[in-house]
Amino acid sequence: MVHSLVIVALADGLGGPVTDDDDPPALRAAMAPFDLDREVDPYPDYTEFQSRPADFWAVKYLRARFGFSVPDEELTWEALAEAYNRDLVPADGEEPILFDGVGRPYFESTFNPRGEWDYWQIGGRWKDYFHVRPGAADDPGLVLPEATPAGTRAAGGPKRALDLESMRESAAREAELEWDRFQERAAELPPALGWSSFARLVSPDFPRQRAEEDYRSQPLVDALFHTDLGPVMDYALDAPGAAKEGYIEERRSRAVVGAALLTLDGEWINAPFGGWIGSTPDIRSAASGYRALVNSYIDALPDGTTLVAVDAHS
Image 1: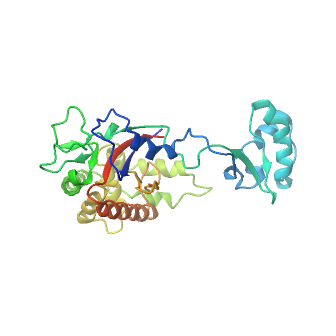
Image 2: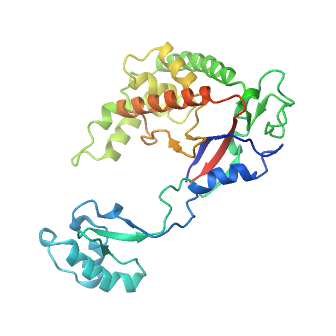
Image 3: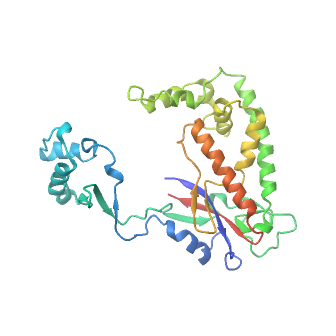
């Protein structure tokens, strides 16, 4: 399960002064459409029926438990559905396989297709995410966390009271130090290849797990993977033409955007995610596009717009 930082934009604010322990109606209403537990009207879900019938997850259980014997090469969705609905549905309480008007199999679902969270809170792990502008500490719209010097950080507030440029400049300074620290450690260990050099080898004959193990077995990667230098290592090893200036600019562009943006129009936009091991060129390119879009969107918002850092669990 994952905690993600979502930047929520609200046109009319939070409805008055709040703390990071509150549940303001305006924010609750904005987040509600994305509740994973929210049931919607039944609709056909084709997700599990995109491959051939022999690859459907239930085939091995039908063969082992109920003697299903149609060979893989002869198996049709109709034959599979007949056995599945007859045996597994009553035995295990599974939903039946249905067919639409053109013969495509599906499950009837009430799962929220827009679902993104099972619970959330203002701030949470990011309760001091935003910098507060000098002189704006008394703005009544700020969401101020406890145990933080008054007026220096906030979980949210009107854009006019938040110092987004300070956040970006602070990230740039940290990136410069991270780059130098990484270079010092890298000089002490053998050179390493970036994750994409291993990811491109993945195939039926070279499973992803083996690629991940080979990548992680490199002394430099093994030493830094679980440290605060992991992100700069990923960039330095894998970004084309990796240079200090490029890393500083990337970190600067990441300072405000979070892992997702919920816009004023109710659109939830997720940052690209390529897994927990490392980046590849396609993910880096998509992530760069996400950051450019979100930074441009936030910078163009009116100063009266409220921005809130939300800790969303999924």
